[in-house]
Image 1 (cartoon, rainbow, N blue to C red):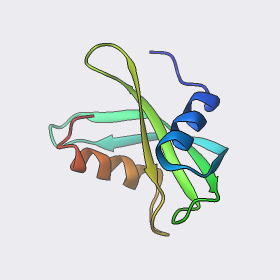
Image 2: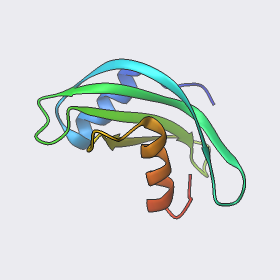
Image 3: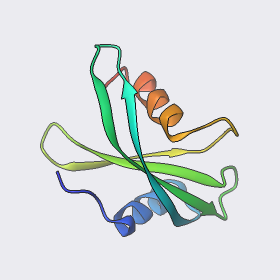
Length: 98
């Protein structure tokens, strides 16, 4: 699977959450999963200008069961949030789906 462009992630952020995202950087993240495997991927950090609640968000892609590229986007809601925390929380919310 090829990596998304920053523009495609920015459009997804704007569509789902509003605000004006500005790419800040990319972090390689490794998160252990309950089944013993490890999810590894690039998480892109964006400054989120003009959003009512969040000043930053994180975005990454995964391959859907049909082979399509899907975006996951999470708002940075607490000072303690790191890209790893956000990915781990998404796995928990999804029942370890991704």
